[in-house]
Image 1: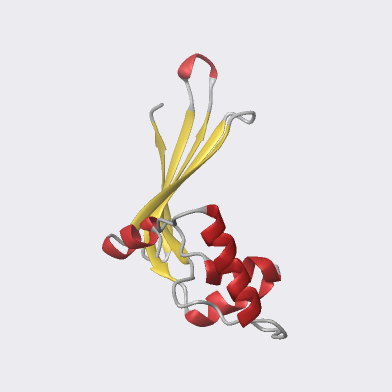
Image 2: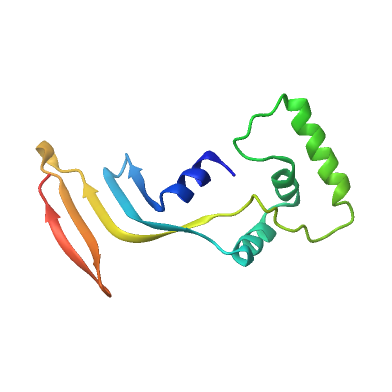
Length: 134
């Protein structure tokens, strides 16, 4: 488990920010996060290149490792373990998360700091839209 995964397990709320400097725009998304199912993880894992799948078995993301040589040794061991196997199972420690948005904010730069800002907040089955001051 990565540091990020541990934090998401403790607090299932997150935000992400997408900034496009050249377009002078930004989108912020906030919401509840949940871990995807093992089946979804396996489905995505299967789309990865073979060496990436082997690397996932050899490496426990964000955990300290003694040296590059140690990592390469672990990769070699996993290559041997899965030699001749077309399908490689997803490791227990490997997976992803999905963010279910509850709030979106769109920002577009304006002249003299007169930016356009809008929020969309989830309300039941719909969204409440509001314009914000810059």
